[in-house]
Amino acid sequence: MVATHRGFLARADRAALLDRYWPALSSNAWEDACRRRLPRLGKRTALARLGPWTPASRWWHGPKPEWDVVSASGSGDRLLLGDVKWSARPFTRSMIDRETRRLAAREMPDLSGNVDDTEILRVLFVPALASGAPVRLNGVRVVDAAAVMT
Image 1 (cartoon, one colour):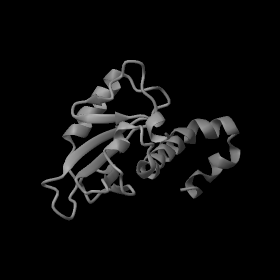
Image 2 (cartoon, helix red, strand yellow):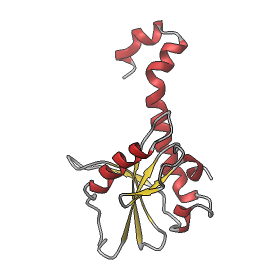
Image 3 (cartoon, helix red, strand yellow):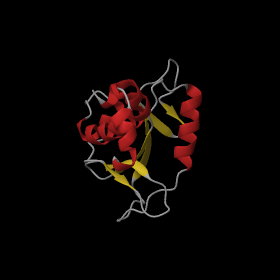
Image 4 (cartoon, one colour):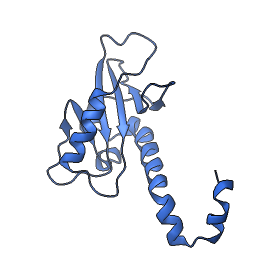
């Protein structure tokens, strides 16, 4: 990947580099933080009270939809399926509505084992919520960075 951008990387000033690559770097870091922090959530967060959660991973297979965060509760009675979204601006109610509808309709991953008796939690991870934005909509829980980093 670097080789194809070598000329730009050599000529660009710091502002141009940040303008071009900062959104992707921020998005990747936020997704990684959500997976890494899930098993370590502060006990006061609503999501932590539904766990504790096993180490999270990403899931994708062939043409099936990708899941950014997949984790089981320690007791095995819950399965968390999450999508991580990045925006430099806080997520508004309309943005949450759009993303939770997509997440609610997303096909479940093919997981080994029987999940028939398992409660499925669909979770949307966002860095920040605008004032008045819901924390649960369309059957999906919404978790922001304050809860992830607690």
